[in-house]
Length: 352
Ligand code: UT7
Image: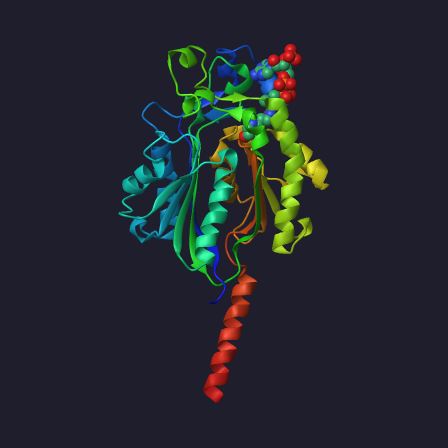
């Protein structure tokens, strides 16, 4: 079988209309715009309206991506929704999204690896395409963390925003899509980012509720240390798998959790910060949505192009990490070369 690649033919992102600035947060908790900007690089975040859910945000992003790909939802072979904040513990939000999109009977599943979910989803989708099992796959990263944070806890409530981002992958024989990847997990750090009383280990009851154990808890310093260590390591592994080095990469798209983490990654890779796509000031940390949201924003702003080689790199709850070398569309040169070879072959056939 000819080698198959997952070309990104559609992309779309959704952020809720409501913007909450750092100044707004000064009225809620003991914090300041200056502290938040200095320590995180965040200026504002979008927060979902009461009638919005992870499913509705996912569908908004997915519709844009399908429209861009010129593909009907019914033509999809698979839907993957990466999220930690599905509408319910069960049913899986992926089935709600599948139904709302009108993708009748299309298989759909949720992928839960925290902030790395979208990259885990992207590489999973790529495997289904490479193997020849499926041709058209929708991958969504969506997160509605504003419903899972304690708005009285200044150490977490200033950090997150709500959003969804979606990619459509379609089978192609031209080299593009995920060209190399790396994923990993270290559960010894599971306590560092946790929603304690939301699962079978600690079912929510009056006591856990009174203690606010249904809200996100995070050991920010430990996560920070982990992130600065892992970003460079996983990036090198993805690059090696793609047979590339950092000089082959146009732009690095890191997880958008903290500008200082991105600056530390830039220093450890020996790169200027300008090589990194940074959107944290506008959206804060949108977890599994952060990378597709940054890419959509970067494409709209003309900061990146479809033929650029991107290095996507993320870390998050688990603790998990993931990275991927991505080229959304084949290079025109490659396309021309392929067309030339095909026409030469035809010429040979005709003259024979
Ligand atoms: O997507 C993955 C999930 N999360 C992350 O990637 C988070 C990674 N960690 C971080 O981004 C940073 O650790 C934080 C932004 C969470 C915190 O920054 P930090 O520089 O590590 O601050 P810190 O936790 O060491 O706290 C320094 C001080 C403390 O006060 P004292 O003990 O020195 O008096 C905090 O109580 O800052 C205080 N503080 C705040 N002050 C004003 C913590 N949050 C705030 C706040 N406003 N919002």
